[in-house]
Amino acid sequence: MKKLFTLLLISSLGIYGFAQERAISPKQIRNQAVLVQETKQGDRLTKNPTSIPYKSTSTLVISEEQVGLSRYDDQANASIQNRLYVYDDGTIGATWNHGLEDNTFPDRGTGYSYFDGNSWSEYPTERIEDERCGWPSYCPFGENGELVAAHTSGNGTKFSTRETKGTGEWDSFLLPGPSGQEYILWNRTITSGADRNRIHSLALTLPSSHGGTPYEGVDGALLYSFSTDGGDSWDYENEILDGMTSDDYVGFEGDNYTWAEPKDDIVAFVVGDPSIDMFLMKSTDG
Image (cartoon, rainbow, N blue to C red; front, side, top):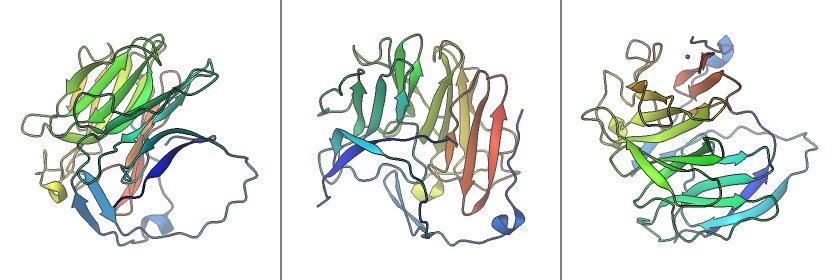
C-alpha cells in the first residue's frame, strides 16, 4: 500500500538548468565512473542512486503551503520539471503528477492548483486531461494564459491550454512522436517571447529498457520541437539537434534534462547523467 503523501509547495529561489554551446566539466569529474542500475516500471525508472553527504549552510527561511494531494509517489525519475510558475502579478500556478487510485493509477494525470494572490484553489480531485497522462511541464502562455504539457499513454505529448490563467475550460492538442515512434515521453516544455507564444519542447523516444527501439541510431533519442504560433504549426518537429545524434551519444534516459527559464530571446537546456558527460545547449534567437 502506498503511503499517502501531502504535496507541498516550497517557496525558494533557484536556477533552472541552440548556436550550440557546451559547458565543459572538470576532467576529474568527467572521468569519475558511477554505477547506476535501472529497471523499468511502466514509464517509471527505478535506480540505485549514490548518496552524496551534504550539509546546508544556508540561512534561507523556507515557507511551505499545502496545495494538493496525490498517492502517486513517483514525481520524477531524475530532475524535476518546471511545474510551478510565479507570475509578475503575484499569482502562482502549480502542477504535479496526480493520482488517487492505487496500484495502476488509471486516474493519473496533471494535478493543478492556482494562487490568486490571496489564497489557493481547493484541492483538485481529478486530472485536467481527459485521458491518462503524466509528467507535466507548466508555463505561461499567451497574454494571460497558461500551458501544461504531459505525455499520454502512447500517443505523444498532450498540450493543455487556456487563455486566462486560473479559470476556464482547458483546450488541448497532441504532438505525436515521429512515424513508428509516436510514443514520446518525459517532456520538458517552456514558452518564450514577449507574448509567451513560442513553444519549446523536449521529449524522449521510448528506450529499449522500456520496450522501445532506437530512433536514428539513438536508444532513447532526445527530440526538440519548436512552434512560433502557440502550437498551430511547428518550425521544428521531433528533431535531433546537432551534437546529440548517434555520432555523439548511444542514448539518453528519462528526466536527465531540463530547461533554464527563458530570458528575452535566450533559451537553453542542460543534459546530464552519470553515464554521459554533462552539456549545455543554448540559442540566442529563441
